[in-house]
Each structure stands twice: as C-alpha cells, then as structure tokens.
Length: 113
Length: 112
Image 1 (tube, each protein chain N blue to C red):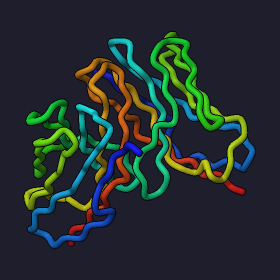
Image 2 (cartoon, one colour):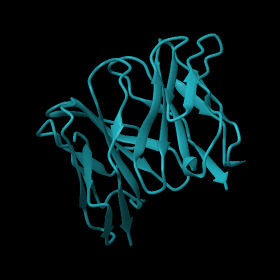
Image 3 (cartoon, rainbow over the protein chains, first blue to last red):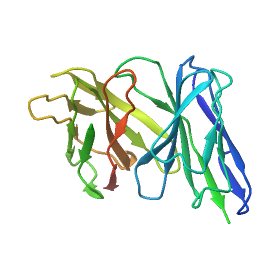
C-alpha cells in the first residue's frame, strides 16, 4: 500500500537538544510539506519542498531545518533555537499539479521538557 | 491573499441529526476545494474534494458543493453517527506553486 510514514509516533527530548523527525513517502510525489499543530489549533506550515535538493520556508520556519536528498524522504530537525517545540508535527505530500490535494502521515507528537 | 473561513466549534449534535459545517473562501484564481477530517491523535484524511464550480464532492455520506457565486463549500451529512466525532478542516489550493490554505478546523461531537 502506498502512503506516508512518520516515525516515531511519540518523541521525548530534553530542552537544548536537537531532534530529527522522519517522514517517508512511497507515493512518488514530488512535493512534501511539514506542518505544526498545537492543541485545539489549525495547521501552520513550517517548510515545503517541490523537488529534490530544493525547499522553501513556510510561515513558521524559525528554529527548524529540513533536507530533501531523496524524493521519498523529507526529514525535519527541530533545533534548540525553537522556543516552543512541544507540538504535533504532520508531514504531507502531493503531486506537483495545480489544485492537487495533499496526503498526510499519522503525525509525530514531540514533547520537550 | 487566499483564505478560508469556517464556522467555529465545537459543534455538538445527537446521533442521526443533520449536519452542516459552513465554509467560505477568498481566492483570486479558480481553486480546488477540500474537506479533511482528523480523528484524535491522527493525521488528516482527505474526506472529499471539488475542482470546479458546481462540482459536488461526496464520501461516506458527506457532501459539499462548490458554489462560486457565494464562494462557499459547506459540508453536510444527513444523519451523523458517533463515529463522525472528529475535527473537520476546509481547505483550498489554487495554482501549482500555491500552498494549501486550511481553515482553523471545526470540532464535531456526536452524542449517542
């Protein structure tokens, strides 16, 4: 079955540590996205990539970094510079076509203490 | 810029009641419109979509019609079930290089 996987489901880290969230897709999609969701809130775009080796900042990129070395993979690093990293992180992908829908992974809940 | 406005929740209904969640949009082009559903602790799932005016998207008893004249895409279901309890997001996407714009979500509670 094609889909998007995110691992792990739950992640715990101490303040001051960098942490990398995994996102893999086997849908052969060109575009991939990272969102942050806080309790009771909507989605905010962190970074997105429309092609391998290229990515753009979203609305809340500060304190985050990404790479896109392979079409299938788009890992997100939450750095120690991110002031409020505890949140639910969602990865998504889509085909590169006007008006195309996005498909989402199951999410990673990150807790930093 | 493009935007989506959906009714604030939570919305609480009894099982078998009729559901409407309002969604209106602002867009300069001709966007595709979507409804997504998010169950607790999970990612978003595409519920239905419509790509042009007067299209009706439908899935699992839910329907929404793309109304260009009123710039709306209201979600409806004739008889809700407890299992429909979730958060529903209205969204749009216009051009190829455009991001998807999401509404803030509407939490739905169905009482048995």
